Length: 178
Image (cartoon, rainbow, N blue to C red; front, side, top):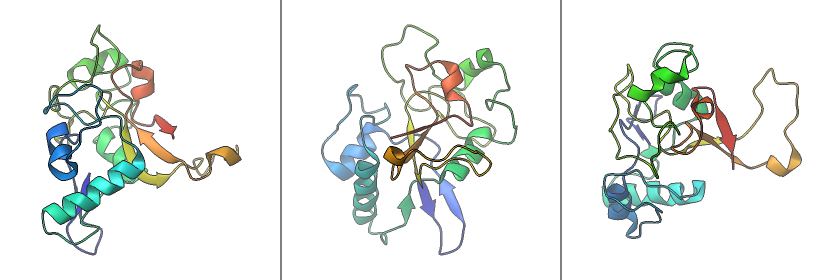
């Protein structure tokens, strides 16, 4: 999640995915299929995230809007951490192992947050582990000649891939809609 520092564009992006313990502290219930306080919360909708952000602001006595999801552009910038390669570790998906947790092993669920090395910006788990919601509605990229399918209007963006998809689906530019 992002924390707005003021009414300008200054923001902080959380170093880790939101843990189940953090979610439960604000929301009481844990919707995750793989319960563990150190694991990222999963099985949440975009609307669930909006409720969490409001609850987190109330819990910390902060104004509504202090916390928000990153935009797609903010998320991709943070994930890339500089390079314009497919992954923060380069173009070869085999280099992801130090940074990410896509479906490259017999694991049966997400890993605890921060289990892998951070990227060059000090951020963890942007490739793989669990899909991450962005604030934006899903839309074609500006130079994409294909129109948005009517049934996808209003859908939101997911980035980063997760623990059960191949590395190709965890690229910095990879995106899904839901």
